[in-house]
Length: 487
Picture 1 (cartoon, rainbow, N blue to C red):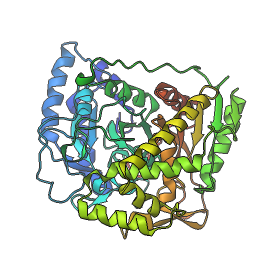
Picture 2 (spheres, rainbow, N blue to C red; picture 1 turned 135 degrees about the horizontal axis):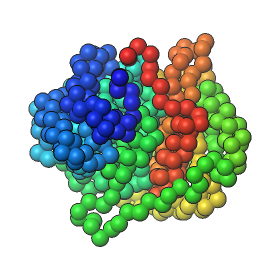
Picture 3 (spheres, helix red, strand yellow; picture 1 turned 45 degrees about the vertical axis):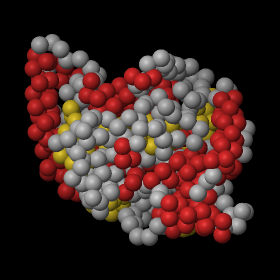
Picture 4 (cartoon, rainbow, N blue to C red; picture 1 turned 120 degrees about the vertical axis):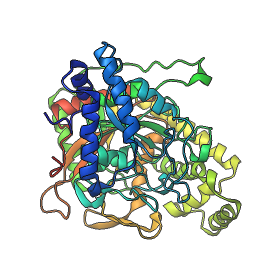
């Protein structure tokens, strides 16, 4: 039996039945990391001996008939930006590599309470601010499907480790597709939860405790079922908010039949590779045959282009927390220099970083009106299907500023940052977004045989709906498949 690419649910099931021990399974993944991770550079912080101690303890509990928790005994890694007691949390920032967290992030505590065995941390880009994963401390993470390509970001190490069979389960964070983009690039599953349902405590820049606007934390996995298990473990108010209670509604329908599904394959602000558009169109044919109502024109009633502009401005305002005063002054001067009609990424970024609080409040008011438009939309439609990126995984390109880089989409160069359109479509409004495998790039292309995913957007607190849709796709359309050469 080779457990390398099994789902976390199946791994836990094998342990509960006694088919494999916790320590035996952990050592299997540790051996794979030691043998194979030189190719991906995904698991960059290793905590093997403490994990072995915990696995031995869980083996004793299992023999006593106390194998509690849906992740019981599952070896897992954690995105480097989450605190794990005794391990460094650097966010890729040089100088922090000798730091040591004094406590676990709340998500780590909750996953361990569900039985998981944490044995390491996975790589991130500097400040989690890229769709590639590289930094001066840990180096570059490669995509297991093609080592010349990036694994995505900022949870690139998480997705690469899952795809290569180096871990049983993972976590990520997402403010600009940082769960969804790597899942799409590496052919795994990812879930960006509804804003606020999974506390961010212990996943914060240099110890800040206020929850960042837009940002969320959530699971990545090799199956949709695992996403549901991870969300159940991670979601719910923390102790300080004990007066609140989370009750996520069940999906309205259990099968495709009768579902109302909107599909968006492209938008003038962001071109999308023909393979991805074709994959969505072929999926639509399948959904119709299964009894679903499908529309390529249904949209929420607001100015989607304006919503994207607001997203970039408020996103960059949110991420400006660590900006020093001289740099802030420079960005304010840059924003003043640029013409008001310039709505390109660079101009929106400059305005966002230097945004006055009054202007932030005005943007937030518009966002709230748009959020209500989404609410009305999802009273009529169950989910919206759309891309999460313009193309399959892109070649490594560590040079220059992110906003100056380009990718090739349908044989044309396009700014990398155009893809932020698909990132913000759900996360700017606090909506859940699940990524599930959709298809593979076709032969004859520069990079053929690469996975790509679909973003499943649902109503606020509709997390169980979007994950359930991914489970339906897993059974009837496409499931995780390992990249070749990682046996």
